[in-house]
Length: 508
Ligand code: C2O
Ligand code: CU
Ligand code: CU
Image (cartoon, rainbow, N blue to C red; front, side, top):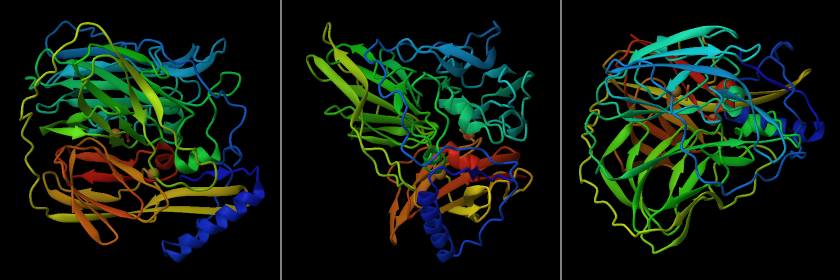
């Protein structure tokens, strides 16, 4: 069972909120109230009050650091052998305060794994997290589910596990890795366990002189003493946004670039629950790739990009200005909210780019990047109705997020798909919030979005592994599963995933 009880602080507020959601739940006819479970799954999730006693600001403006790279212990061409150790690590984020994070190999952003299409990967994972199982999930990689770090395959605290898989041809793209243990995914990830996994193409369609920078965006909330703040009830309901948005583990770092130059940015939203609407101000972006690698052609003139949790964007920016500072801004986006504690919108700067030095010429991008064949006629339809359910009982409040009225149960198979069949998955979201829906181990194509009876074809054909389904929206995607086995699909607001919004598809 996946139930959580909120042990109450502000009873009145919560009781009111609870009945509102309960009424809506019954009005929508999505099933009765959940039975209150025992106390075994209960956890104190903090009060409803706006968090106080937190560190309000972190130092900014240090030079953007390159992400450390995971060393390849193999000298055989086409092979990558490495080790990732998840362990508590002490770092300093706020001056003079010690923050204990969970880190892969001691780094706040896990080391970057960079390999080529077709490579054979062997990564030994050591779980040194006291008292908790963990796994490593290779987000977006088209690999067999047995090697994909699913909650069914936990790695016990104190033990080591070897993951092994081969990266298929034509799968270059910006992937990432993070823990996926049953009921501890959200916490282990917000404590620091996540890193980029880049698959390089055999032939790069981009000009060789184009410089690239990976921007791995996460967030963190710190108590006054420097410790990572636990999730509050607001975090559990809405997804943890985090007080401080970090790029490569740094608050608003500075990057140096030549005036007139072009730069490629691979941008990750690795936060648990914060939507990012990114803009380089007056400098437009050319979108060249998405979750599953390059688009067919570059899309120039993009002013801002919405990245829901787990989504990635690959963009090129030409800094057509003689000098000065350009900032990467996080613009407001209304993704819906349950209860109090909605953060004020900000136009905060996530990264500053200082233009200085010898002027350069922008690069010219090719008109074609790759071929993306449309998936074609679909043979079956699957429907995912997203839901939320809140109830009060003797132990406090239970909050669940549901798919087709059910909370995640790893022993249950929710869907069966036949290998090679093209299917339409229709994801319907009548809830209070947007939900970014992710399918493991494959890429899909977004077909259309429907809101208030209006259908709109998706303008850009891309390979995706995560799609934002806005509230009151229905999104249709085409899915073709090529690898047999049981894999997960879920909301990538990790708190929602943990509170039930996840299912199992068995590919036969
Ligand atoms: Cu990043 Cu189950 O996913
Ligand atoms: Cu995944
Ligand atoms: Cu969600």
